[in-house]
Image (tube, rainbow, N blue to C red; front, side, top):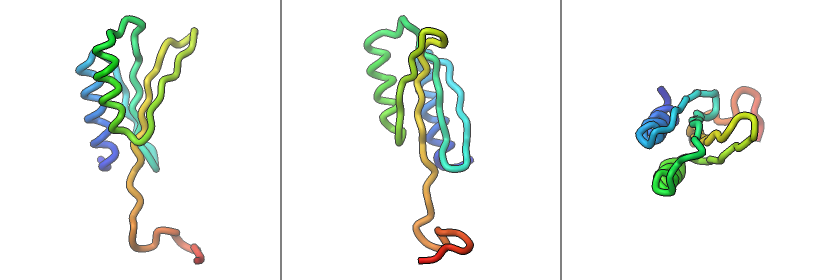
Length: 92
């Protein structure tokens, strides 16, 4: 598992500890965490949730009348700082 995957699993575990069902997906450039947020989440739990997702590179809340509220967080995979970063055929 990538470093972003490890971070995402840690974020998901902390969100689960608050009582939010989570899912983690690994992609080629980042790992995502999504959690369903109930309408009845207390102010104290919200503070904990915000502390948790602040560790991600980006986060947000998608709220719709049809699907409820989904919290999302993105953790980018690190890009190598040396070597052939541009890939084959990359010209400077």
